Amino acid sequence: MNLLVLGGTKFLGRAVVEAALARGHELTLFNRGETNPDLFREVEKLRGDRDGDLSALERRSWDAVVDPSGYVPRVVRASAELLEGSGHYVFVSSVSVYRDPIVPGFDESAPLNELEDPATEDVQKDYGGLTVACERVVDEVFPGRSTLVRAGLIVGPHDPTDRFTYWPGRIARGGDVLAPGPADRQVQFIDVRDLADWIVHTCEERIGGAFTATGPVPPVTMGGLLESCVEVSGAGADLIWVDEGFLVERNVGAWMELPLWVPADDAGFLQADVSKAVAAGLTFRALAETVRDTLEWSSGRHERGEGTVAMGGTEGVGLVPKREADLLAAWARQA
Image 1 (cartoon, rainbow, N blue to C red):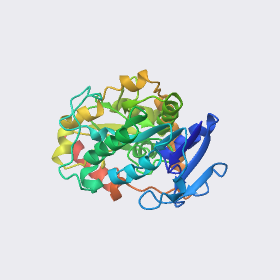
Image 2 (image 1 turned 45 degrees about the horizontal axis):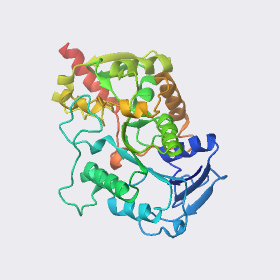
Image 3 (image 1 turned 90 degrees about the horizontal axis):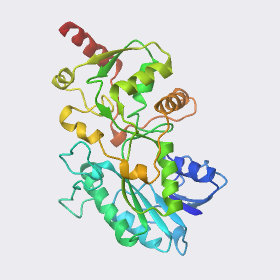
Image 4 (image 1 turned 135 degrees about the vertical axis):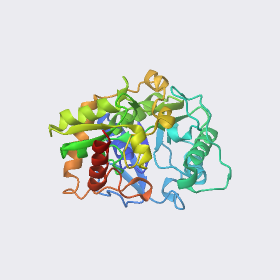
C-alpha cells in the first residue's frame, strides 16, 4: 500500500509511520520539515504547509491518506479536495466532538457539538465544534471512503503533553503520592502504538465510518492505573487516596493539574462504549507495557533533547511538589 501521512514526525503521526513501515508499506510524508526532520530517512518527504502551500501534493494520489493534524475545516478541505483521487482518507478526530451532557456508555450515535459561529477558527475555544465540521468536510469529499477516528486521550512514548506521563514519572519518584479518589472510577486512554496499528489497519481494509477509539478493554480504573505505576516503577511509592470533595473545595484542576481525574459530574466522558472500534479490529496492549515504556522514554527524554510541551500552551501539567505536599498535609489534618 502507498500511504501518505500529513505530518508524520510527531507522536501519533510518528507512530503511524512506524506501524506502516513495520507492515511493509510505502510511505510519503508531507510536512514543513520543522519537527524531527531527520526521522525516517528512508521515506519520501514532501515539504509544504497545510495552510497555504500544498503544491507538493498536486497531481499526486495515494492508496490511503492519514490526517492526524487537521483542526480547521478550511484547511482540511484544501488538502482533502486536492487528494480526492486517493483511495481512502483517515481523519483523526476526537471524543471532544460529543456534546455535553455526556452519558456513561455513550457511543458514536451520541449528539455532536455544533459551531455557534460557522466562520470561527478559534481552536482553543471551539475545538469540539470545529472537529465535527472537519469530519463533515472529509465525509463530503470522500463519501463512503473515509474513517473518522474519534480518539480519546492518546498516551505513550513521545507524548508531548504529560497528561498521562505525569503518573508513571511522579510515582517513580517515590514518597507519598496524592491519588485522586475514588479509586474504582473508570479512566480511559489509548496507547499511541495501538491506535497507530489500528489506523493502518483501517487503511488496509478500507474500513469506513466513525469510531470512538479509546480504551483499554477490559476497562481500567484510576486505582488500577496507579497501582500498575507503583508495580512497574518499583519505587515504593505510597498512594494517599484523597476524597473528590476535598479536591474540588481546594480548586484542584481536573484533567490538567491531576491528569485523568475529573469530578463525578464529568465522569461519563471517560466511560465511552468502544465496541464498534473493537469489532473493527482495535486491540490493546497490556497496561503495564504502556506504563513501562512511557516511563523509560520519559526518564531519558531530556538527555535526548525531547522536552515536553504542555497541551494548549498551558504550563504545569500535574501537581508541582509544593502544591502536592500542601494538599497532603491538609488532608492529613482533616483525617
